Image (cartoon, rainbow, N blue to C red; front, side, top):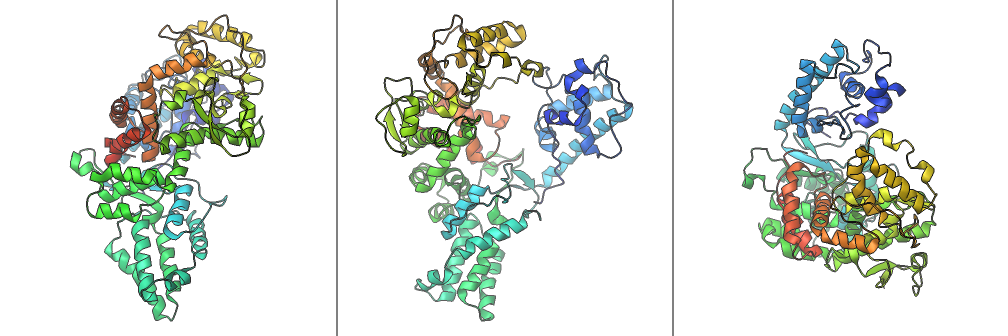
Length: 614
């Protein structure tokens, strides 16, 4: 695609460790006695390739994983420099002053130091060109493309294995983007396959108008929706001319229509979500998305598709923003909303990791995922209280999963709503989709379970552990039973460097000790010692855990609202989105039904305003 200038993506510092020697993997402590060459920079790599390697060699030992006040984790590219300019200003200052690395640490050569300084300064200079970019663009995902051609032409299409991977990031562009040459043939083949599945002769024959006029009308209707309501006059004329030229050459109207629609399906106006970009200095009114952009955002969020005619007519009249509540309800009751609801569940709850050890039969793993998807979809479709995700008295089961859970009276392969009142089940933390992500047949990890709860349900992910902690600390205790595991966790929490995080992590995970790594309920004798949470509370079982989470419902609503906003915008949330997330949580706290949460997300400043940085 067209961008303001080449956008170089560098490996993360952690991934970049693979580029250096085994001695470098140990950090500064392991590097002190390592023989150093005059320069790690070779003649072959470019400056763009050299800089991340130098950062790994001389900085990563201290400036990663929360070890200092300045972390250089993550992707090192212009997006990171733009987002964390204050950090890189400090890096530049200490490099100039030669304050870093510390005197006892390996030192870069003068050439290496100057190379790093030059690289950072060049990146800062390149950010100036962003001011000339007026568009923010993202290529359609595979599912969005499939849904769009289904809704536009009634064609069922599934991405082949070699179809381009999803373009998950929004990017800046100075003008209408173009497809990279490497993916163009794939989209041409997809357009041909889609159009071959549609009988245009039959469609034109059933209309009342003249076939030539019918072809033009059909083309105009499809282009209007494919381009999300914004079809420039010159594009309308260009597409119409294709049908007219075909007729002039003696070809049937259906042939001309097919040729024109191929142009639509290959147009960047269809293949990319495109929005006008706002500047950082923009006023509130000029930063608000247009009615057509709002229609596109709604359709992408709720249907993973293009807007329908009802949305576009409201946008034509300038009335969509005033009728958001009514349109949201209408769109949620449309069958097209069902699949995106399940997609949201999968993305939020990491359902592609269900039984990552592949210890269970395929049909059981599938049922575990479907259980969670069905519960989330049920709450969405029925506009129920989202706190039922923590402590519902029902779930969705089929015979295989019910048998695995020890629940009787369920027959057949179909998932159906089942009461679990009076059982340990109910809520996400009792579902196999979660429990199997954090264990194997012989071992369930309280640490991984606690981390999952903190990250996905409370929105307070713990920082990554120091690398040396991961070197087989728990390996001897796998499969040795809960009692031994509790002891080693207690020893772990006794370490001052670990206690601050692990009191919270372990306390949440140990409350689920009665569920084994396959999600089966296996009551265990109460441990002699449980983790005392930082607030002084101790959780003995899953019932107390669910009560603990419900007492912290505002944290849960903030986490869920943030995940939903992320899903709605199709981009990672930034610091400037924090007020919107907090506002959403506060607004829905008195009545946390899903419809209220959804309306607040759609009405939030982040959803309603333009993006001025990707």
